[in-house]
Length: 427
Image (cartoon, rainbow, N blue to C red; front, side, top):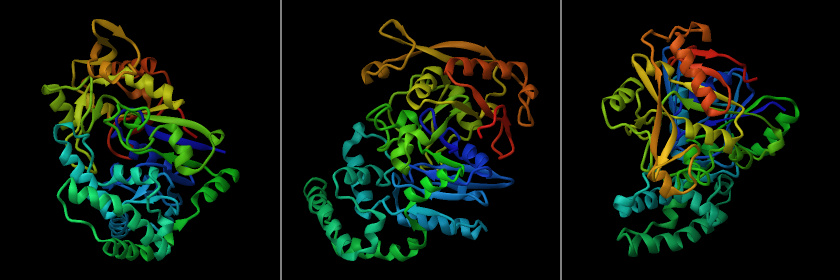
């Protein structure tokens, strides 16, 4: 049962798309198990760049079946637009499978998300405004709309009515917005039903049968560990579980079937949105990382906040995910620095702290304790083996590995699919 989980070990945007795509040619299924179109992946194939928001990266690998699991929230308009864009570029999307139990992002979920974030003002979370949080809230409140509901108009209408009973009160009386008509929402959702019907399936059954038949299944997380609703920097988090445990609930497979858990790490650190970020840089180094690394959100278009590598976070990700391997990305971005700071601990109220504090207050006041590693000037984008890297680059990788608690099995030295050094096979 070769089941692998691949997830972000920081605040997301670590380069999971490249890692998933690299493995995609060797696996039979690639499964998104949580999140929605608030998570973006950039995949470079040859001279072609693909920006994926909702679809699993494996959709670009011929012979691989991409799956949107039950833990994902699906905006039908975004899904159809993304499929159309790939089809126009000659990508075969016919093998896509969508869980009938996945929840639908409705127009009113998007409206509630946007007006709530504006209402919060300086207390805003920094959401993408795409309706992700309200959709997960509806799911927990048991008034959500699932994909399978699109095929029973009576049930769909009843569920939309139930959801809008409260939401229209909030929109009209609290936010001074116009009420949303039930029939308008139902009509729009029914219009999507036939268009996505060819993809809808019992994905839990299909994936478990595949694992029983010794197929290779890769579970792909969106966002990152520090954005997990339970284990992230709450409340500045996403509304689902990108950590390894989320793969089990979000795809319907038992934990005993997971054989390997791979964490994706940038050679430095970034995050998008609000919330604490101990190593964040506000100087020329931060701007250089942003510019050289192309640090702009694939989905949001927002500039990412940039900082030096944080080993405390990496150790935390190893612990809560049970990581067996790391994939280190964007090592090439660090070329040119004379020395590179690495955060090895925090100082909180005058005390040195080696592990991530559980208290939000403590983490908010954490100051990074740095060690300085020698940098390198040589171009590393052509390196094919670890030995091809300059000695200082090798030393940097080895130091990060020692600090992070799991072996670094692959290194990204450029944006292209082939610009990767594989040290240990993931399969």
